[in-house]
Length: 320
Image 1 (cartoon, helix red, strand yellow):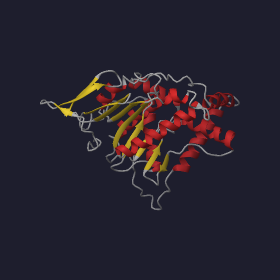
Image 2 (tube, rainbow, N blue to C red):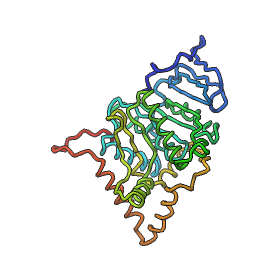
Image 3 (cartoon, helix red, strand yellow):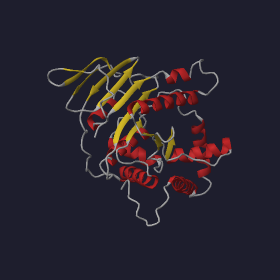
Image 4 (tube, rainbow, N blue to C red):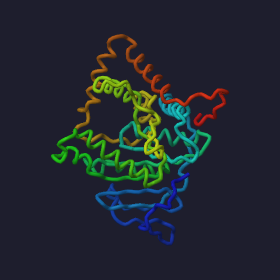
């Protein structure tokens, strides 16, 4: 499985040995050279210079190796979310927003595994927008994507510094940066013909968002697992919304994912961070407060987003 290469630019040149040669530095400061027989589309943009290449067809087969409990929680919970909400369908093309943090990395790995589990074919592509605080922070992502055989678009932006500059006087830095990233992600989804954009939000994000909406806006609302945009032309999905952070952290370590630190100066100083601290006090009120809140909100959000059951109970599973 691979994304169509019809949209690839004419800058790609091949030598007599079938090697795709891309002149100019990549975001990691290295020249891009990939064998055509490998066939995945790698698109890298750094400071206005675009470097693209063809790499491997189909990527590596899904490993049948035994998974740990934490890894199994991620894979099976994503499958449950996919099945209950009708999240994916045959032939869909899923872009995964990879920030470099643990959540989005585990999401990408999980969806790669689920490609070999679901009873239909769907395509997968990683999309990374470097916010610009450290233009080389994602260097480890390139070889990992190549090993996994995952198509990708990587781009170095100035969204982070711009959001923290004097140019942004009306909105918070986090709001501005997130708005710029989301806008660019939507543009890239249209450019690559993606039907889905997957985000790495987890159960903690669901709980924090619920209480932020309640306390700041007076709304009883969480985070949708499968949300249509542009008249249904694109679906925003959150396959890990049923998974607690502790399992994601363990799974990332066990998979040895090349996660890197968040260089944003606002990290840990956001409204979401403040709500997480407030909730930690709420969890201490009773012995089972945290478990009860998580279980209740997870069930509520899943029921809210689940497809209606067919009368004969014969709905075909979309994910096992």
